[in-house]
Length: 299
Figure (spheres, rainbow, N blue to C red):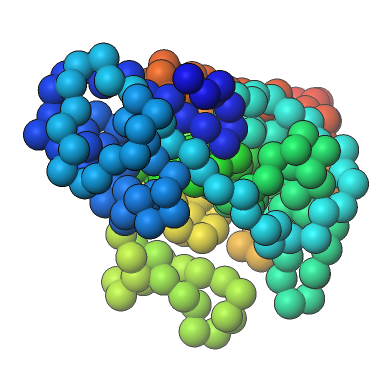
């Protein structure tokens, strides 16, 4: 039997199935497209033997998936990464502010993706860098990267089913009156500024929930949960209801106490891809937000 690692997955069947394809969809929770690609690449076997789509599968049989090497998409660049969690399929880091997660036309290097590509090379992980979630350049916190296609597909499926839970903290202007609230307002592009988004009837459905953690004289610390994942969603929603994030120069104004928006991806909860174990990963409050909270507490 092969050794299970980032490249190889060994799954023991829990029940009988009429075909390996059925088992793949039902028990492994993976797509038909992924199954077909594995068959085409001769990368899937049953008990170390070649299989066909209609091969019957019994309880206790081992489906073995070998994920082929991939060429890196991003240029590897040495970068100090704060690793919060890692298993055979996922890498979770604490993203610092002022850093893009992937290259753009104007910033082709020194992004998180470049740093993770370098990390993969050093760890002999011969796979593409696949980002599970995205964070704005000046937003810090939990960032999830898959180490292989299996991890990416499993987390993507959990997101579609609303299994993955993401929690943010934000420091906003003003004293928020309601202890908690749900903002259910559609968001779309701002025609007057292509960089910005705004609440608009023609936008896509967006749902943001917030809960007050602490009120200050002129500001509030919020815990924020998002039920949808639109660009700038938290920033747009909070600004729209009159509580813009402190330091957000795009949807608010600059602040002398912090050089970026006071928004931090604090926690993510998900099911571990291979075992379905519930995992919670947190990124501690960054120093600049802690300093901001101290300063406004002194006001």
